[in-house]
Amino acid sequence: MSELNKPFAEHDKRQAATLGKVDALPERVKAPAMRYKLLTGDDLCNAPSMGWRLRGVLPEKGLAGVYGASGTAKGFLLEDLGIVLAGDADEWFGLRVTHAPVYYVCLEGEAGMGKRTQAWIKYHDKPIPDALKFIIQPFDLLTDDVEELAKVIVADGGAGGVVIIDTLNRASHGADENSSADMSRLITAAKALQTLIDGLVILVHHTGKDSTKGLRGHSSLYAALDGAIEVIATDTRRSWSVAKSKDDLTGDVHPFKLEIVPVGIDDEGDTITSCVILPNDSTDAIQQAKRPMLRSNQRIANEALGEALRKSPHMGKAGAPVGRPCIQYAEAVAIVAERIPADSKHKTTRAKAAITGLVERGYLAMKGDWLWDK
Image (cartoon, rainbow, N blue to C red; front, side, top):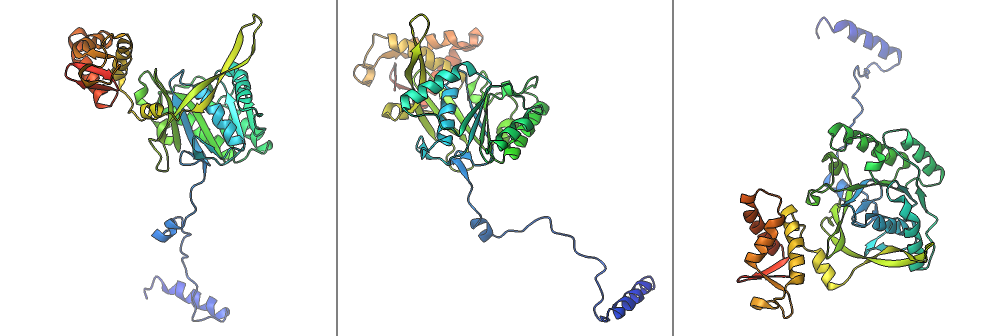
């Protein structure tokens, strides 16, 4: 024993003797409390399974997103989802539902919410569930509105429920969604709301000019989401797909259609209409929905050639189905090149590349010198 430690040892012996425990000296240093818990493979296998609001797509608790270009019927789809989550239906588009109170913060298109709700009630011949509530007052994620909304929801018995914020842009006054700092603040605020209600917050957002690039704004938003739905609409199809999931459903596509419903008569005697969302189970719709997304120039080419094919007098050429409109490749290149946003010396090359992409992705068929729509 070193000379330095002798005084401490003698002190410990005297203290232990006083307690009648000479041979059991107290430990001078206690082990710190363990911060990390070590799990075995069996621990992980036996852990509770994840809870879902919409099985495999939207978690019971967390932050989710629904996004798409303007005019894709996101609002109709979201209200229908909210009604189902708050109601008594067992599934939505074939996916199992776990019910909860739903709070729809409608900041965009609120003028049409009444008609949309009337259309749903009339078409389905039953009332909107009481567990679905709407908020149409201004709401800003970057203010104390977050705490105020959470208080109202908890007081209403909605803890553990769902909040739909439609849209993120309208709930982020003055924020730059392309800024990492501003988007970080918005994500933090949305997660704070999620924590306060102990449930699920769904942010509704738009895509940028090129919809193939996904959510508009800084990429940190997509990274922060626990689940995401993309809504797509073209001349030939409408669908929603699982853009992000903690399960194995990422990429699943669900076609839908809009059914027009008359809801009244205006002051001039004209019929007032709205729409409801319905699954589209037709074979053609399912095949269309499974087609991969197009890049910018491919989308331009698809729209241009769709118009040209509808006007084409040539049918069933080079093995195309009988009665199927066809167009010659050279003519197709010229039509697409006119619309491609590029300098003149690159238009033709990019038009050819776009058409090749359409063929490879199954939008067009080609044999010899002829093209037709699949």
